[in-house]
Length: 119
Image 1 (spheres, rainbow, N blue to C red):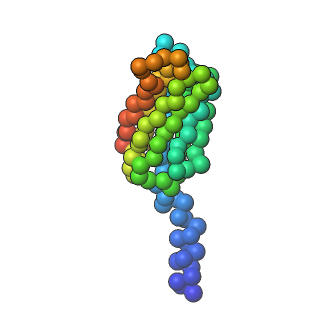
Image 2 (image 1 turned 135 degrees about the vertical axis):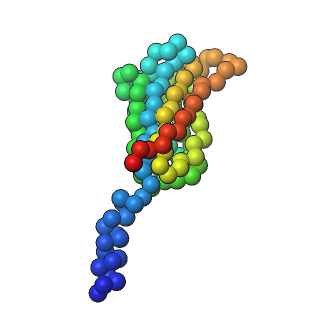
Image 3 (image 1 turned 30 degrees about the horizontal axis):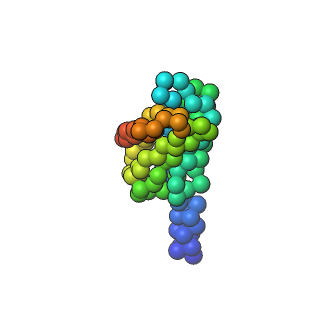
């Protein structure tokens, strides 16, 4: 009975133990204007969101660690991708610059900074 009680407690509290991250950022074009409605997708997960009117987004992630690909897309712009290694106790800030598809020789860019979570 005691073993069953321990198992039930661990099962109920396991979501609290799983790694939790926040990926947030800002999407602009090459002129610095926000790209409202840009799609932000994280590989290996079902996590996705859309940039708001000012180009900002927040993407909470739970239970994923290791290497993932962050993709940012919008109609008429080149796709931007960055590989991120998600580590426990860190959040991630993304700055993305999307270029129009017609631009040759340059590609869209993403920079990612990780910051420790204050506990």
